Length: 65
Image (cartoon, rainbow, N blue to C red; front, side):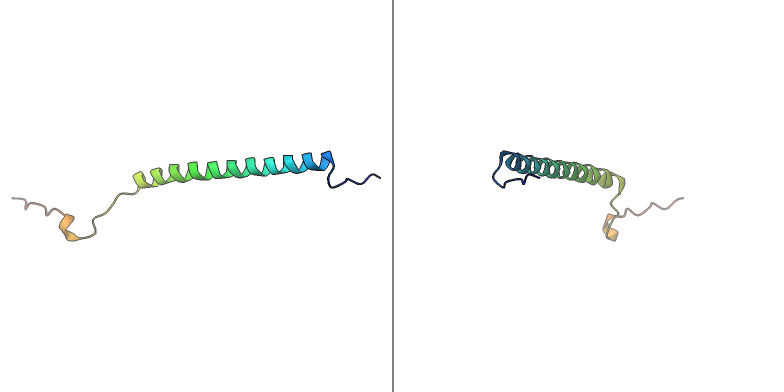
């Protein structure tokens, strides 16, 4: 059985492809995270209405005759 030398071309290519795969996967995860974060923030911001925090924002109803 042949041992894989540390400095062989096969080992270097394996390390290179592994690093590229990890970088591509990390980039894809980061891209999806930021896209979902922006999309969900916009959706939640439009779905939730702001409520007045004090009485000054309330308009008193005019008395009915």
